Amino acid sequence: MTAATGAPASGTANPAVPAAGALRTVGRVVVSTVTTVLMVVALAAFLFLAVGPRFLGYQTSTMLTGSMAPLINPGDVVVSVPSPVGSLKAGDIITYKIPVEDRRVETHRIVELKRNSNGTTTVRTKGDANNGADPWQATIQGDTVDVQAATVPYLGTVIRSLREPAVLMVLTYAAPGILVLMLLARIWRKGPDTVKGSRDGADGAPAQAAARVR
Image (cartoon, rainbow, N blue to C red; front, side):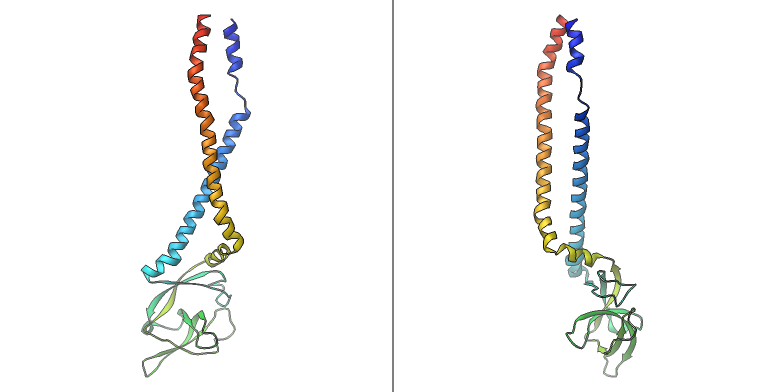
């Protein structure tokens, strides 16, 4: 009789233990998912911006102003592909070095195009959001010019944000720290469970046998 009444008391589970375990599991899943997503995004951005242009031939540039809004907004990445100068036409969006001032790279739409007798091509460009055309004419140098093929919204903004010192510090120290904490938590979680299971297996059977004998 003593064994029959004592066994249920020792086997009563603490309801807080499963809840805490479930919370830890959810936390691990969230952290693991966020970390995986960030790693995949970083890898994809690296392949797109660094590897792709070298092997696939396209070029990328970040739009810094709103001169081409709303089609291309500040922070968008413009993807352009080399196209023959002879195929250019009014309406194409090209990325080129302007022939004045600092010779910066500009991405604007062709509004005027002239084929010269010496075989060169002169263009005048304009930003879609600007009131007037650019105050220069550019003679395209070379046989090809980069023509806009696609736009990736916000990617340039994300890249600039990742280059901020505070963000770099977080990615450099916090991400590895999180991985280490996850590893330690997994070891801590499995260790006691394994030991407890061994003790239950070693001590539980004799106790039950003793109860049956009594």
